[in-house]
Figure 1 (cartoon, rainbow, N blue to C red):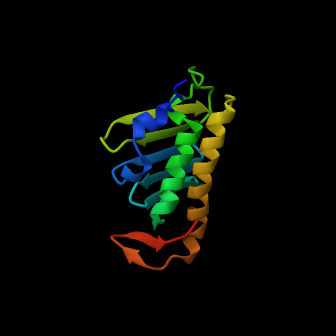
Figure 2 (figure 1 turned 30 degrees about the vertical axis):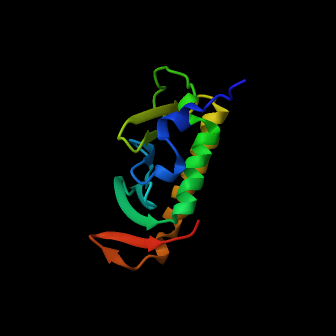
Figure 3 (figure 1 turned 135 degrees about the horizontal axis):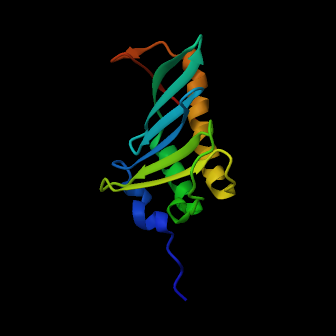
Length: 160
C-alpha cells in the first residue's frame, strides 16, 4: 500500500527548499487589537502588536531572526499536522467575534489560507494556531530587551 502524502507536503515541497516560503498568522479584533506575525523561510519574523490604549489602537512592529533549523521545525510541524488538509466551519461571524487566520505561501508564491472563528471548535486548528501564536507572543514579550534600531524597526537575533 502506498503511504498517503500529506497535502501540506505537496503544497510546500521539501523542507530544505523553504527560503521563499512564509507563514502568516492574524488575530486582530477591530475594537480590542491583537497580533499578526509573518515568518519567512529565511528566519526573519515580523511581529505586529496592536493594543487598545486610552481609546486609540496603537501599533508596534518588531523584527526578529531565528535559525534555519527552527524554521524547518516549524514547517515540519505544519506538514505533520497537515494544515492544508484541515477543514474548518464556514459560517458568518457573531458580533464582536474575532477571526483567527493562518496563511501559508509556498516557494512558488501560491497561497493557502484557513481561518476559524473565535467561538468555533476545531482542536487541530487550535493546536497549530497556538504553536504559531506562542512564537509571536514569546517574541513580542521580549520587546523590552530590544535596543538596536534598523529602518525604524526593532531587531534582535533570537533562539526560541
